Each structure stands twice: as structure tokens, then as C-alpha cells.
Length: 388
Image (cartoon, rainbow, N blue to C red; front, side):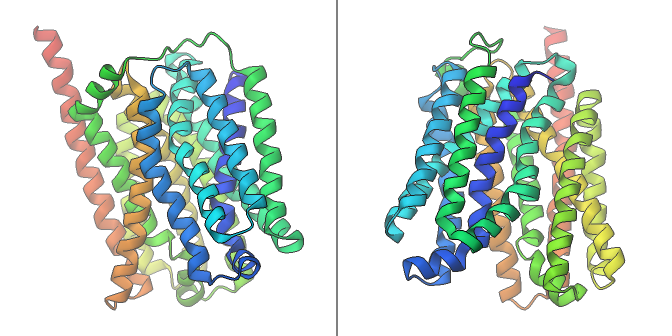
């Protein structure tokens, strides 16, 4: 795998550490800035909203820019945003700093995926994209726990200064390792918008959103589920989430390899497997050993699917993948927000924690149907050119 892809992975590690670590530092931030925990929690919601809005906007604005310069420029904005987070004296300025970093998040992932897929042979594209997304799993496994520990010991601002150091190293790695002459070239804005009109691109984006909704209906509430339903101690929850992170890493590797062999075939079977695991969760969550095994399999399947979805969007967008790839990040984060909202809505309506996976199962089953429709659209797309 080209070392340039490793540079992209290190950058996504820093980006996702910045995104997720704040969840473990809400009490420290609230205490330091004299705000409530719910107010501090808005920093999380605002970031997700910034990703949804910023990804397509920045993708449009940077369409004609050289991709190497765009990636390095976005990384510089991340560095500035995280530095502002570290020194922000007020809640309002901290919110502005978080928005600055969030606006670049989706665009970076979208362009990085396109660049990574262009740096390798066609039969290794899914693995290259999976390696870029490995930064997400490493952030959850290493960045977030370590960043939380640093924040609790030295103050939350120290955590963001540490993230700035990661951002700086990532920038240097990209400057040194990403080729100045990339095999993939910027496309016109018109071509990028035309790619979004393609029915298969739209279905691929819908599939990404549904996958995210299915995940976050349950995962948003995984800690109370493990505590109240499975009967796990607070320390036990930490270990289970660490195991979940290991599963995500394994899934990313598996997804990359299977995606290079048979993208649609592997995606279909993995989605069926994910649906089956979700359907069994209500019956296994009360049994600690089976619950842990089920959650581990869930994590493996979830992140085996994730890089495949990004590859799918890039494939269907053909010669103009930037905007579609970036929109995929917006679709995933929109699904994140919808999933958390649906889960909360169900709980407020009286649905028990152990029944939430039923809702996720329904969404995953619908995603399976979308894959069937997408396969049909692919077959028709092959037939039409042949006839013409």
C-alpha cells in the first residue's frame, strides 16, 4: 500500500479523535466554562450538523482545486480549529471553533477516499479506502481513551493541544508523501453535479444513510443498554467498547479485501448478516457472554460495510466522484443524527432499551432491499450501453 495512503490514515485519525474525544470531556468542559452538561453536549450535535452542511458546500467550492493542495489546506484548517478550541475563553468561541473543524470533516474524508482509490490498482481500491477509514477505528481505540485520560488529568485544553500536534504531523506527512502529480484529476462542477443525478449514486447515498441510522439507533444508547440490560459494570463497559473498537478494525480489513473481490455480492451478504445479528440482540443482551459476542460481530460487520459503501459511491460516480464521495459523508452523519433521534423518540414513547435493536433491524432490512434495487440498476446500466 502506498505510504501516501498511510498519511491520509494518520490525518483521519486526528480528525476523528477531535470529533469523538469531546464526548468524554463534557464534565470538564462544562465545569471550566460554567455551563451545563446539556449545553456542553450541544458541541457534539453542532459538530455533526457542521459535517452535514459543510461537506457539500466545501466540496463545491474546491471542485477545481488540485486534490493534494485541497487535502493539505483542509488539514491546516483542522489545525487552526483545534488550536482555537484549546485557547477558547468562552463557550461561544468554543462553538465557533468546533464548527470550523466540522465544516472540513466530510470534505476531507470524501477527497481522501478518491485520492486513495486512485493511488492503487483498481483491484485494491476498496482496501485503500478501508485503510483511510482505519483512522476512525484507531481514533476510537486509542485516540479517544488516551485523549480522555489526558483531559481528565491535565485539563480538556491539553487534549486539544495534543490533537494539534497530531494534525501538525499529519500535515507534514501529507506534504512529504502525497505525490504532487496525482493520478486522479479534478473534474468540472457540472460533471460533479451530473454524477449526483445518477439513480445509482442516489441509491448508494440512501444506503449509506440507512446503514448509519441502523447503527446509531442502538449505539447511541449502548452504555445504558450494557449497564441496565446486560448488567455490566462501568469498568466492564469500557472493556466492551474497547473490544468493539477491535471489531471495527478487523471489519475494516475484511471489508477492504471482500470489496475488492466482489463489491456488490459481499455488500449484500454482509448486510444480511448485520440484519440477522441485530435481530438477535434483543434476545442476547440479557446474557453477558452472548451479548459481548453479538456486539463484537456487530462491530465487525458494521465496519466491513463502511468502506464498501464509500467505494460504491465512487464507482457509481465514475469520472466525477468528489461531490458524491463527500455527500456520502453527509449522508452518514445525517443518518447518525436521525438514528440517535429515532432511538430517543422510541425510548420516550416507552420502548425498552432491549427492544431498540428491533427498530435497527427494520432499517437494516430496508437497506437490504435497496441493495437488491441497486443490483438491478447496475444490470440495466450494463445492458443499455451494450444495446447502443
